Length: 355
Image 1: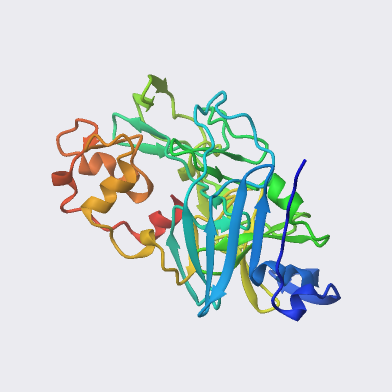
Image 2: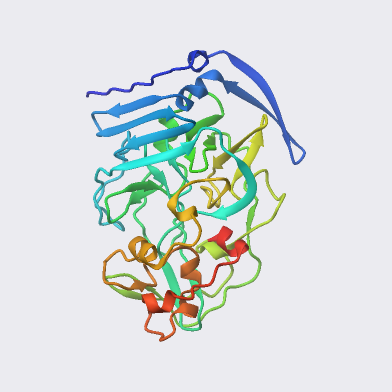
């Protein structure tokens, strides 16, 4: 088996493995953090090639921008694709990502569909495109981790989009193993605002989300795919099947609304085994397409009209648009066309954060 794994350290400190003991206090919890200088290896330029899996990712820092050029192929084993619940085949992509080297924290969470990218070039996308729609007007976005719909996730909590893009919905098991340097915090990627993404092996940092009390509402609900339509009963308590089953309670856990935390005066995002798994919002400034204000109609259709039929179905609708689908579908034909989006309302901030 040929395996080439090259990390080019341009900073002398990035190759120093001396360890320093640091202290963190948050919400009356005291933690001792071991920060190794070898964590900084992926903060400098690096090249990651794996001939066995076809991974080709390079990162260079230029003019205060971290530029990642990648084919987005994982550098580890995956599940079998196509497979049950996921009929798609992994294929190379052509992606270039720009991350600010000096992130700017704003403290204003903004919803984002793809919060960041793993060190190997594979993107994080915690939400899904799956929707249960009710005749009474409710739309419920299905979570990746539930028992209602088989989405074909593999042991890396990942699967494949119709474009061939492999992506992580939760903790990327093999990435954690590949980049584990021995400390509790494993550097796994970068968010699009430039802040790093970590995974805590001990799980000591807890999210601040909880299941909502009470029961869901909605009658005559269906889950529609291109192949069939299933009748779904959404009644019962909020059990985590849908994104809207959760609510953020400030101070409930260690992490903020975007699953972030400041340790040693450095802000970072945590990938967790509990909801939201991967951040659904960003706390810093980011120059990515979905964060540049309201997209125009052409951009909306390009992003969501996956079958290129000039319409957006309930299945194709994503983010805030999915939650306003019934409101915008003026003729109730279960599709959105350009004329129905001319007066697209701006979603309120709280709803955007939870989708």
